[in-house]
Image (cartoon, rainbow, N blue to C red; front, side, top):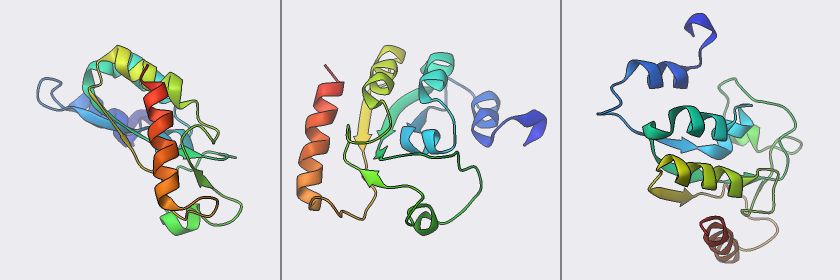
Length: 133
């Protein structure tokens, strides 16, 4: 990327704010070592939506293109229900709301090893609801 900017930063800079809005995938931003709150603070008017997910631990930033399978392999990333991981999603969601985000979507990466998918969805719903208040 030119001048040390990420592709995301180039898109934010090179697109017309009146025409182009973004959905920040906060979980993968954190995995890449970026701070979603920083992006929402600096470019809040550019984000219409947040995409939230949580991981048990993020040991080091991942900035190379790789497959989801390799990222989710043992010892790398472990997806988990919202609020059960290492990402402060409440602070991110609150920063998004303050910046004018209108929609928040939840995605939990499989596999569902600790609880069944429907139970995970219920946990995610309750957590998201608490983040919005």
